[in-house]
Length: 209
Image (cartoon, rainbow, N blue to C red):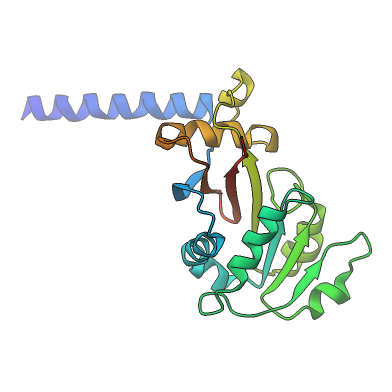
């Protein structure tokens, strides 16, 4: 009986030490996997359907979906078109291009689920986002964001990014690529998808060589 009590005592000490360490060091938040690295097929329709299926419950729950992608990226545009085709998975809604003149009347009047095309880097909440705060959060409107990004599999993670507690936009790509790099087993281009916290999704497309 004494041995059992001693064992439990040691366990509580270890747990306490671990909790104190985590509190002092802080919890490092990283992206979570949604779609594993997959060879990027020339048939983007197949890729689009895979993404639509993965995000089906999120699409169903969202009133607004914010999209951002690199300017002039035809491949990202084609991917967006491919995803939109799967109306069996995505309920039809409105499409609203972002502009500095976009106001409450246009946002409220957009048929839901409304897809809003945001400028590059403006759809997520990795940093303060006034559009999301003013037009969505303050109005209790359910939303998610999807950002299309390019990556180089040989990107290095800096010491700053390696120790970052809350992920920044600058560190998003290198830290996410580092977590999946060992799964990039062929020389063909890959794509993968990750999620950060509750509402921000990121589709990573390997840059053309």
